[in-house]
Length: 313
Image (cartoon, rainbow, N blue to C red; front, side):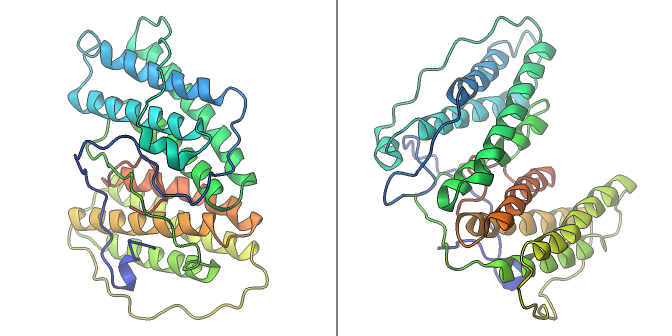
């Protein structure tokens, strides 16, 4: 079932926390049967190379003077990448996840500088984003969300790994997205609520010019999403959005960023359920890109980076 409800519908969007229970790698859902996943040629090797390049950076952290935050992020990313590889190369994800056998990591290429290694890692991640995105746009059901989630993960990691990120999620769970609770009407309502949230965030005092630019940029993205969805749903009967959202203007920068994090965190799960469930092929293509933008915004505003963005957490 949908676990995080939209902030403005009366719920609080909680970020995923670390369980620390030592469980083996798990899928973020419990499929009743194997997912219809076909790996594009070369994908497994590319996933392995990203983990190996992250390992090379970690292994040379002292010599290359990497910050503790960056090293911690790289270690988290390396583990997540191997878990993704484990899921994708399994014929039966539900059974394989309980085996807890991680795939063998390939040897890292012989790169001698941090700049060359990071550049190689970024190239691999951007290539992975393209492969995952293409697979998501042609898949259906939960398999489409699997690929869309990986595309969002790869794009966000390409942006943050050069510096690291402070908040890292442990969002692998057994929960299944509710494929019946989300439709295009709710996604349109989401866009209206997100726009209102960012308007409230921009009301904060003490924001710098850069802060306002960051908030306005994301506001414009949410504003642009609504007509895109409508173009892919020409027969929809529009209803007036709810009036009087339960959200007050932000007092300061901290509250503005908190509003942004809650908005994006709640949106991730709703968009994920839409992609995996009732979206038409045209709508799904929009949803795949919206999920990636939402995940990037979540991390940009201080939310936890997620291993499986879009799945219930």
